[in-house]
Image (cartoon, rainbow, N blue to C red):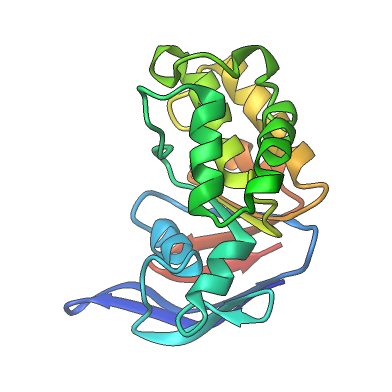
Length: 213
């Protein structure tokens, strides 16, 4: 589903990642573990098509992230560390807006919004203003926007950052449930996070993959 070969990214003379290679089959939840600054977010941004590599290749569902970025973005859902939310919008209205951005046909938008709201446990919050929600609920809205267009893969960057223990447990359980039907890459600097959520772990340090297991 996701294939990465020899991925390298330089910022000036500094290498953010070097010769990163891995593959993730369909339906696997992969943990991407490493300290802050190890290269996790750079790799995630390349996979989502928001950042070009200096060298190497990456593909999602057989589509190259550089030359076929539109096809890649249709097939992935992305949740950065800070969820891309509009605080003044209501939950259902925001998700409908995301559907439009993602090219979901008008006839399918209501159904996709309803499905995403149900999957993320937001049924009683669909009419709430996002800015008035707790951080844990806003993170759920962030996950909902990542799946509302029915992506084949999810890219989650530090998805429990800033959550309290209860919210963290709920979010981990939700990610595991979402991973039953999708390929998921979850980046974190916390070992217990990936142990609790992922089937497989890649460890990155200094911009290089140092372990896979």
